Length: 143
Image (cartoon, rainbow, N blue to C red; front, side, top):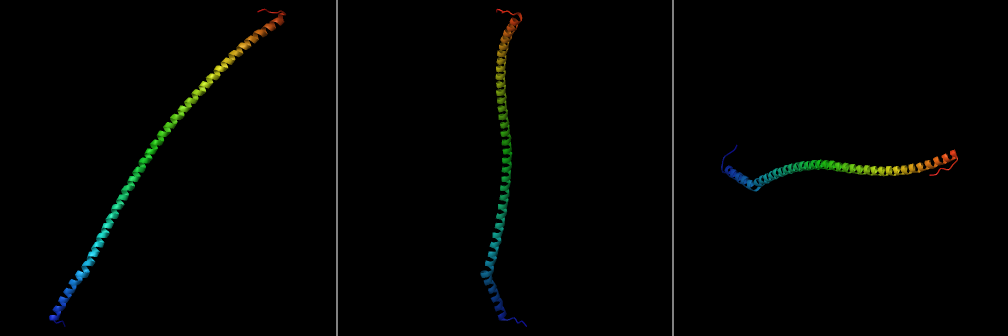
């Protein structure tokens, strides 16, 4: 049986003193350390989430910059193609003009040679006609 006497009160006082001492020396530091760890973990999670969000934003910026660069490269490529076509057309025009000039010069030279040939043939025709006439009539024709 339990008897209530002075030793029970002393034991209760000793338990209370033990709980007070354990609370001061053991429980409070453990609770404080647990609280600090929990706070550190929460801060680390928040920091990780912030970094993840920042990484997402940077990735979106990179994608946007890449899209802009591709669009700009497309515009630049189209501009270069237009310029190249214009230069090619100019070169073809110059070549056509040169060919036309060369053709005109050749035609002019041919016309000159034809004219010379006509004159030569005409003079030869006259002299042949004179020779034929002389042989047919058996006399010399005076010019």
